[in-house]
Amino acid sequence: MKFFAKKGFYHTTIPLLAKELKMSVGNIYNYFPSKIYLAKSAVRFASDILTSSLHKINQKNISAKEKIGLFVQDYLEITQVSPEVIEFFLRVYLSNRDLFEDNENGGFQLAEAFVKEVEVLLQYGMKHHEFRKSQDFFISFSVLTGILGAFTFLSGENILKKDIVSYRDEIADAIYKGLS
Figure 1 (cartoon, rainbow, N blue to C red):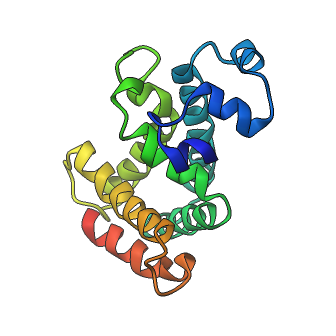
Figure 2 (cartoon, rainbow, N blue to C red):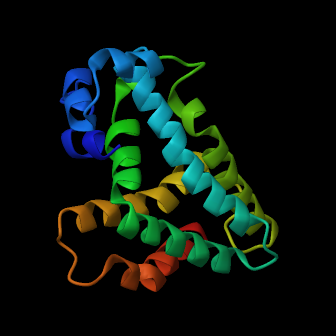
């Protein structure tokens, strides 16, 4: 994921990965039959990290605003500790058509569990009258993930003047306002 996040999907090759991992090309192909398969496996891994965090938060009996705050906190901490997870998810997964071409094993199917957890959060907020009713899911999803993605980018480019986690309350408030 670090290599994909740094180089991007198209500039990452199996021979370069093998060299970086100090493995033979053939050994990588024993586990992953293609670069796309490897990237899809990494997307599932990154998605599972975000899904696990949001699932735990969705189980709590707290307001949607508090849930957003907790998820933003977790997301920013993941970005700080393992930036390659988030950068890979954003740079490779969401910006790569090759990963979306196979409808059964690609596209949003790769992050289906995360998408469902976001939907649970949004439904909870609407049910408890914290979020606007009848919001378009993709717009709501973009409000949540777009702001987080922007801060991931700014952090990765060393543009932020403060530690990324210190923006937690402002980011959570902006997301909440965008949904309510």
